[in-house]
Length: 316
Image (cartoon, rainbow, N blue to C red; front, side, top):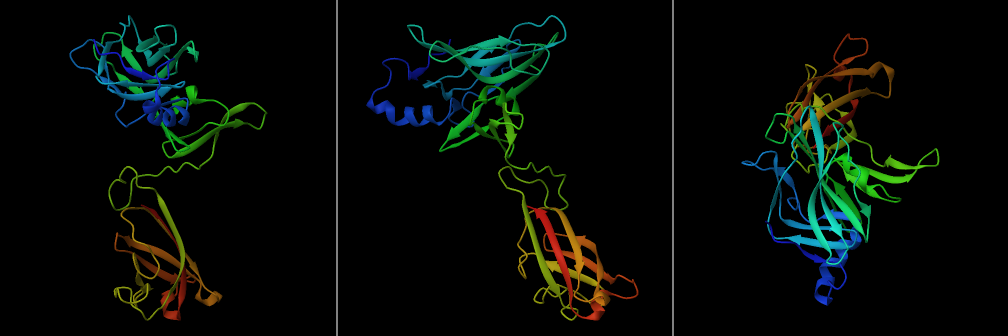
């Protein structure tokens, strides 16, 4: 059996030394954990339907708990179908006050079940939802419900955490999207998206975007000279005499990218006789090759002097 946690926030548990690290964490949000691995729930091998709760530090309802050892638990047997179970930390203020892991049965639906929610009496801090399948000795699925808070911001691991984080004024970022719990248009309280979610496909070049690298969009106007020569990196971005051109990254105002999702080129000219249709001929991390023909398609656009390109690149 794991050693009971060291707790700060229960009656008589906070002294001057503990105040420095307990108060910022407890005041940051109603619930949180300290680090990426703190109190993370994972599958525990060698134990039927076993789970493991990492050691670490977490806060809830004004109480900070520090566990020095990991804990293991066996989830209940399921007779048929599948069932979700909520793994949580239960805080009980009855003397002697305690904080201990608990498993709360749910249903076949992926949702948080009813839990204790009376701060100062008994309250549960959700950590994970775990799915047990009948006839299987290994937990089939775990959904991380933890959240992290500090300096006015909060991040949650899953959108299901919004269930227990819902309270007026709450802000939380999940998968790069920020949500606020606020009055909705019909006058009730609910979650409203504050940032636009960006969903992207596989990159054209550059492989997979590393975690933590933000998606960037660059948009600009380039004046392309017909005499510069697109193959010459020291020249301005241009199409050459055969209509093959290059927009060089890291040159002429175009930033470098480590990976590219999409490129869009739009032709622009002050006079209609120079209007043109650019076509992408190739994309690399060095440049975008393109061809540009007149709208009439009777010749290369660069044969008629300077042309303009409106360029948009999405990448990281």
